[in-house]
Length: 258
Image 1 (cartoon, one colour):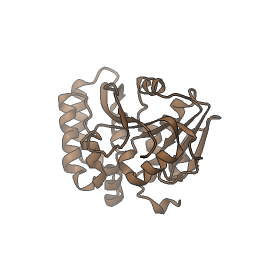
Image 2 (spheres, rainbow, N blue to C red; image 1 turned 90 degrees about the vertical axis):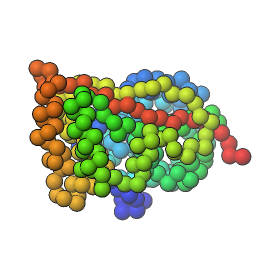
Image 3 (cartoon, helix red, strand yellow; image 1 turned 90 degrees about the horizontal axis):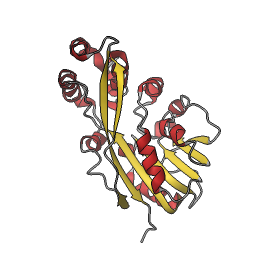
Image 4 (cartoon, one colour; image 1 turned 60 degrees about the vertical axis):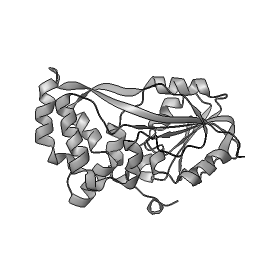
């Protein structure tokens, strides 16, 4: 599939995506590994620059990591167990009944769900697990910073959010998920970030990328002065603050279609 054949929200920010998108907590992967019945093959669909694929590479015999954006894949580090393929999640080149774990990190809201779920059932081995997760729109730093980000999300980026963003606002709770649901612990990404690191993450949001394409400037220019003042109120001597990004997940066992 050529890049023009899909809704491309991130190719323009592929380098920043690889640099600023945070890594997921080890507890997430540990929990998923406890659920799978075999560790022969993992499919990381919508891999972007390979964050989830690389984190799981040491736990599976092989990983197939797919993404329709060649520019995203160009930012993914090579790994001997990871086979990167430029193709859509809805139409992969994976063999029938070949996959033990399917991961969809910060991507399932963008997919054509009926087509993707048919592909999931096609490639899944008996006992396969599908795990989809994403960040929350609510980023927790401090009351001052949180207030600025709330305004940024609603006022600055409001006109630029794609319709699929409704799944982020609901924490994936309204996502059609026709699989045997499995429980997941509450998880968050937690780290100490500098202000430039934090701004870099904000500018990789799909709505921020759309704003930049439309106006020719980063969306964060509208809040930079206010955000800088708010950040300074709670920052330590190194200029860092603790940032907490709650994760929302839907995880299920893929059973044969009835």
